[in-house]
Structures are given as C-alpha cells and as structure tokens.
Image 1 (tube, rainbow, N blue to C red):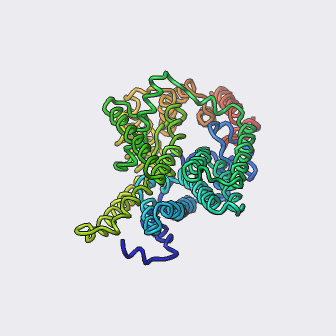
Image 2 (tube, rainbow, N blue to C red):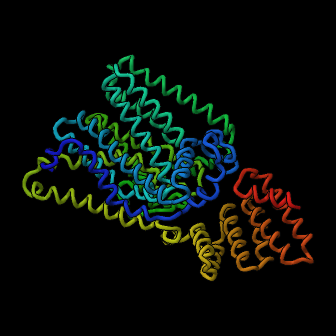
Image 3 (tube, helix red, strand yellow):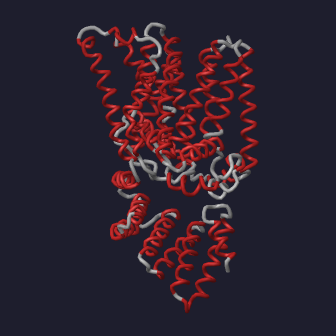
Length: 540
C-alpha cells in the first residue's frame, strides 16, 4: 500500500491492464442467449443508419424500449467486423477497460473531498475492485449485454465525471456541455441513464447546498432540454407501446416483490458467488424476505449514519439506490421474462467498490500484524475476485455452457431446457434434444411464453426428423398461444417442403403455405423472413 503512493500518472492504466488480463478469455466466446436474435433477426432489419432512429422494421420486435444509439453502434460494428462475434467481444472488453479508468477519476474526486492524503491510492483501489468484480462477467462476456450496458456505462460515468469537473469549475461551460451531451447520448443507449439526473441533484444537495452558483443551472437547463428531446423521439416512434408491457399485481405482491428484489441485489453485491446467469423468478420465501427486511433496515441505518457523519458515504449509498431503482421497476412491474439480472448492478457496483476502497485505504497506516499483512489482504481479495471473474467467463463461452449452468442453478425453470434442446438440434444431436424437451414438458409450462417455446421447439425437432404431422401439430399449438412471425415462417416452410414431396397433395400444401406466409407478412412485414415469404407468394 505504501508503495502505491509513489506511483504517479498514468496510474489509471493499471485497471485497464487488469481488465485485459482477467477478461481476455472472453474474446473466444460464441453467440450466447439473445446474441443469436441480435445477429440473425434484428441487425439484418437495419439497412441504413437512420433506421436506428426511425425504428423502421424493428417496431414489431422491440416495443418496450427505444435505444437508437445502441442500434447505431451495432450497425457500425457490423459494417466494421461483419457478423464476426470476435469484433463485438473486443468492443465489450474495451468498454469494461474504459469504465475502470473512468471510475478511477470519479473516485479520485471523492477521495480528495474526503481526505487529500491517500486520494490516489483510494481511487486506484476502487478502480481495481471495479475492474475484477465478479458481477461484471455477464456484461463483459455477453455481447448483447456488453454492447448496451458497457456502452451506456461509459457515457454515464463520462457525464458524471464532466459534471464533477463543472461543479468544481462552474465558469468553464465546456464541462457542462460535455456532461449534457454525454447524458443525452446515454439515455439514447439505455433508459436507466435517466437516473443520472437525480444523481446530479443529490450531489448538489449534499455537497453544494447553499453555495451553488447560478452558472450551474446552465447544465440543468441542457439536461431538461435533453429529456424533452428524448421524450419527443421516443413518443414519435413508440406512442403507447411501452405501457402495454406493465402488469401490476396486487399491492401485497408488489411490495413482496419489491422487498425480494432489494434482498436479492443486496445479497449479490455483498456475496457475488455463485453466479446467477439466468433468474426466472423473484425470491419470495419467508426466510429470504426476513433477510431482505434486515438488509433494507441496515441500508437505511447506513444512510442515516452517512448523512450525519460522512457525506461521501451518504452520497454513494444514494448513488447505489438511484442507479438500481429502474431494475427494481423491471422486477415488480414484470416487464421482462427474467425479472432479475446481475448486469443491472453494473453501474451501481461503482458505489460498492468505492466503499471497499474506503475500507482498505486506512491500512496504509496500519501497525503491527496488519502492517505486514496488508499487501496480502489486498492482493488476496483482488486475486479472489479476478479468479472468480476469469472462471465465470467460461459460463458465457457458448449456448451449451450457458444454458447447462442456468439449468443447474434453476432446477424448476423450463426455458433453459428448451434452449439446450435447440442447441442440440442445431448440432444434430436429436436424441439429446428430445430428452431435454420431454423434461421441459414434464415440468408443466406455467405461462404463455413457456408453452409457446416448448411447442415451437417441438415443431423444430419434428421438422428435422421429417415427422410432418407432429411438426404441424406442434407449430399450430404454439401459434394458439402466441402468433409469432417466426413460427408462421417455419410452418409455411414446412408446407412448402411437403408440397414438393407429396405431388398429389401439392395444391393443399401450397394453399396452407400461402396462408402462413401471408399471416407472417401481416404481423412482421420487415423481418428477416419477409423477403422469402414475398418471393414465394410472387411465384404462385
């Protein structure tokens, strides 16, 4: 620890080097989870860069959010690397490295407020912890998450850092302009960045109350303009779509889910192992809710103590709560099929890493046995975090490793088994695929999404096995639950194939194929299957 005090600029490079060392193995990863849809379904819809803003062709697929700059980034990467997953992994790793450096400069500001002596060491510790914290594996190793969470975090941390520079030098408007532009870009990447506005207000209230210059309101004016512009862009493309996804249950269930959500994230931030790569439901057992209540009480107590004694502690507790709050809404409003995810802690985890840095910083003055062991304590914790992150990156290597882990961690979940079956079908391992599908069906699908995925995948299996009647029946059952364009495409393709195989029934199968393709085009006229459907219909 003492030696760190002699290290001068560029000390912020150390988190970058550690990031590459720990997560470099992620460059060998394949398409995982939603990556396949991203590469094969959504990106092909975007022909021109303006499509990312106008949302042409994407509206039938993504109604819950508006993220044009994310799509713009993906299009640029596609044009640069093609559909090679390696290039996308490089960018995800780059975002993690940049975020580690930004965390260093943000933490340096707060350690200078707290105590000038040792500020560099404290900021470096915070950045090193952030670089290797195990909960970040999902963001770094999974392209769909890394390109949105990582990109958004770069913009959020940049906006916050420029905000801090501006508050320190309010006569320099360029910092306010850069902060505002980064904020606008961040909310156009992901909606959770909106909470940064409240982080700014919290900082002003805690550190600048009674001494704020009127010049500082220049930034808030720009931010309000950004929010207005974002609202116009979003509503012009999605006037009512987002509202249709919210499903608020009874007040009791809502409060129970909210408490369970807080307890889950509190547990994960304090004990980030074992990993939860896929979470199908909010924990709601009585034991867990009791733990959640104690955790919430402890959090409130720390906020009260911080307000009285330590402004930096108070602020970072609020930062954690504010940046995590959109994730709580996702859970309690049941917007997503996976209500909880470790990636939602990514930005919030900065606050926890800052607290870790604050705890370890006083060891520089330790005496006795701690003086001799401080390097081993710090090095041991960083080695532990780094080893867990390196090891857990293997979970995201491919779909088989990911869904096998998810199935083991969620013994009652159906979706991981269905995805494992789809993986086996792609590899031509049909007996294994049938075994997974049968196991999923035996678990009695509980909602429309589960029923749909089970029958849709059964249809794919029977289609590959040339069992026409069984495949047709499975696809029809899937469509009874949800009229998905992909299922209509597969059903139309099935009829078209059998029209060629059964000449005496060609007219019947051709008519059925025509009906399926027409319904596909009605639902999704700009999708990846639309051109093939139109080609078939024009050839009749």
